[in-house]
Each structure stands twice: as structure tokens, then as C-alpha cells.
Image (cartoon, rainbow, N blue to C red; front, side):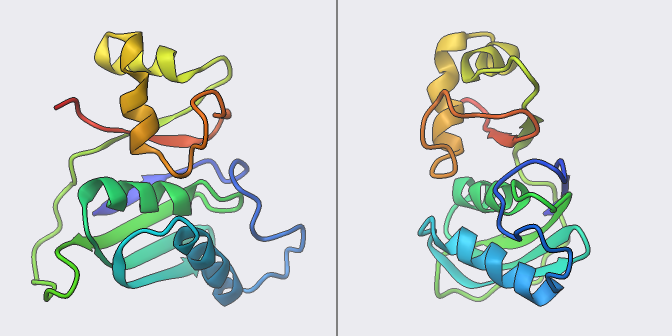
Length: 158
């Protein structure tokens, strides 16, 4: 759980050019975007408050939780994601637990980056780029298709 920052001007263009898009419409578009990836979730909700997406509900795994956060944040016009998702088996009750920081790291892509460079920076081995690619699928469709301002999940190595 926590608040993750993203670049407001980078990402998937869901809201169009109109500044008149209401927050509920933005939330509906963000939900449609997240649902298009087919994650296993329960009671997933997105609320848009200005430039922040607040995510609640249940998701089946930590990697999928991170992917949902990144999918919601890599939308043009969104600068923060408030991650309130619970990782639990689908169908189980959400216990009341104090907030903790999930095991994840995020990286904002800069001009000239590629997944091999990023893997070398975090893992010391450029050949570990598939680990980063897998952690960010289905948002990433190809290892060479990243852009400056995009936020990626950098998972720990097992």
C-alpha cells in the first residue's frame, strides 16, 4: 500500500483532449483500461481525485497488484496512484491490517533507457531484462517498446 508517483504528461491517452472529463468518467476509463488486461480481481474499484487514482479491492498475487498499479499510473493525466489493494485469495475476506509497504521498486524511464540498461542498473546484469519485462506485462507488449516518463515495476530477483 502507498502512494506512488507518475509523470502526469506521459502514458496511455484515455481521457482525450477535453479538460471537461469528469472524475467519474476518468475512473470508468481507468477501470476499463485495467480490466482490459484480464487480471484476477474482486471488488476492484478506481476513484479519480484530481490527478490521483485510488485503487481498492482484492487481487490474487503481488505481481498482479504491481501491474494494476502501473497500469493505472501510466495514464496521461494521472500523477499518483494511492494503492489500497489487498493481495488475498479471491473469495476470502479482507482482514483489517495496518498499512505496510509492499516489496516492490518502481523506476521512471528516461530518454536513452532500454530494459537491458535498467536491468544492469538494478541487477548488475543486462541479461536479466526479461525479469523486468515479465513484471510489466501485459502493459509492455515488447521489450523495446518503453518510453520516457513511463513507470516500471522492478521486482526483486528470486
